[in-house]
Image (cartoon, rainbow, N blue to C red; front, side):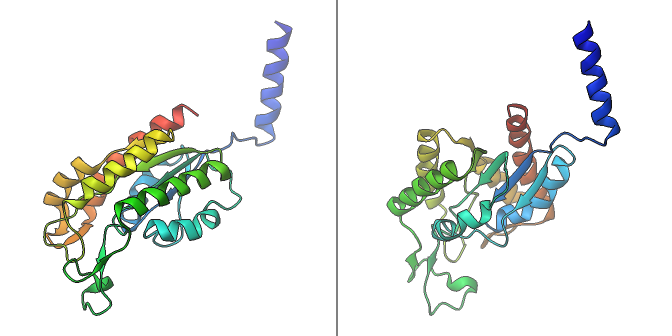
Length: 219
């Protein structure tokens, strides 16, 4: 009885002093797709957690290897969600007039499957060594058939590699690929663009939030 009384007194003192429990911190690392749904995810997770995105576009795994430590910084992250793929499987040619020099006919792929696997392995290793955060990998979204620099059929191949790496390393996988196909057909920008309209990003965000919430509950 005395212990409960003293515990209650201590709690009252903390509250009177304005004590607030630590808010979990979530870092989202990703490309323009994650940038598109970020605001919806941040809104949905408030006030359960502080949600931030890496500065700018995380592009491909090569960029990730260069900047991952800067993005993590000295923050005490509880969850880090990350994705790479769309830039890795993109073909580019310096003479292409298409935005981003995309050209899947004459261009060169950014990273082949083997290099993609190696880069992901290294990135996961860096993340594990740099933070105690729970890690979540989000699979690459749909590529429409007329996209100038990417082949639709490459996405499942890259996703399979990524999922194998994540499973091996005990990283949580949020596989949104199949659902992204239907979302893109309904709310994509077009059959030559990997991006989504406002409603499409909202729907993608609705695939992200439940996994973040589930992971938060297990912290």
